[in-house]
Length: 294
Image 1 (cartoon, rainbow, N blue to C red):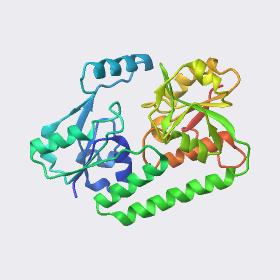
Image 2 (cartoon, rainbow, N blue to C red):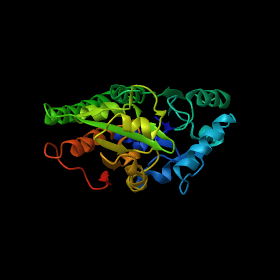
Image 3 (cartoon, one colour):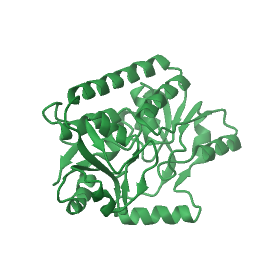
Image 4 (cartoon, helix red, strand yellow):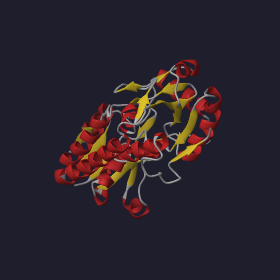
């Protein structure tokens, strides 16, 4: 099977299912091991926002969307040349990847025979379901079941370790300028880690809010998880967030690695959050995953 992934989380799922050798196309944002890069073609491009502030990125995204412009460019010729059997895409977020409808139209126009599978999870259980969906479409359902069973076992172990302990109030800031309260599966991660999510939107899209509204939720712990940033970038932004919450602990999280991409590493995220909330109950995460800034 020839597999094309048009979003980073789907690429993560593909590698977790042992499909790296079948992956022939990815986006410019996907993480591809060095050993596979020579055999993988980038079929989706976009603006490199490194060096832009969160406010500048927000203004750029809002401007493009208001004008009806796409944030990503599908290299249709490259896609057609790969002759894929399965294309993984999404409709969850226009800011994160190409919408599946645009991909399906391109496939039809090019005369490709590929199946287009849209992955649109809103909860942690939904994310595990997408792993099964990819496994079924890629004809490796038994691998998907084994992976999901392992992830569920790890989540159960975290829940058991923190059971009966006081639940600290946790706010998650998914963007900082303007501030966004986290949605989708992120409240599920906090709950699994033994926290009480506040100012979040479980199973729904994250939304813009204000610092005053976030403070009004009286968080004891604030996790800064800006979409598109790894730990150092999140820590720099968390340092600016900290003055808004003088009475709370403020932590930076490797957002892309642990929190915002709907793949198997979300369980790593739950484990890392549990280590923040209940450090005497679970092992400490590696130092490149989460960092206290205040």
